[in-house]
Length: 206
Image (cartoon, rainbow, N blue to C red; front, side):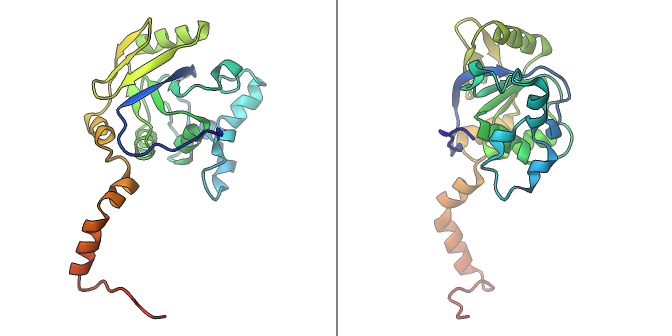
C-alpha cells in the first residue's frame, strides 16, 4: 500500500493520473493477487503483493516494479481482464497499490462489479485504441485526464471517448456506489424507520 493511500469517498467525476500499461489478455485474479494472500484479516497490505508471482518472474522488469511507474494511478489493460475466481481481493490490491481507474478492452463481469463497489471506474475502448495508449506508454509517460460526466479521456496528444455502463457512470457521479457513505448520509431516515418497526427495540440490559 502506498503511504499516501486514501480510499475514494462519495462522488467521483474526474480522475487525473499517470497511466501504467499491462499487456496481455485473460489476466486472471490469481495473477493479480495469488491465493496465498487471501488469508489476510484486512486488505491493507495487499498493495505490496499485487502481481507478486509475475513480478518475481520478471525480476524487477514488471510494469508495477519500474521506477517510472511508481506514481501511476490509471491502469491500461487488454481483454477479459480480471477473469478467474471472484475474489474481491484483486481490485482491493490494485487500489491499495495506487490504481484509481482501469481502461481496458473488456473485463470479467464479477471483477468489474467488485471494482465499482469500491470506487474504481472501469472503462472500455476498442482494441486499436488500447494498443495506441499502450504503445505511447512504452515510449514516454502518459498523463491522462478522465472526465466521467462526459466519458472522455484526454492528454496533450491523445483523446478518447470512453465507454462505461450508464448505471455505473450515474452511481459514480451521484456517489451512490459508496454504500457506506449513503447509509451515513441517510442515518436520520434509518433511525426513523427503526422506531416504526415493532420488532426492533433498543436499550436491552444484558
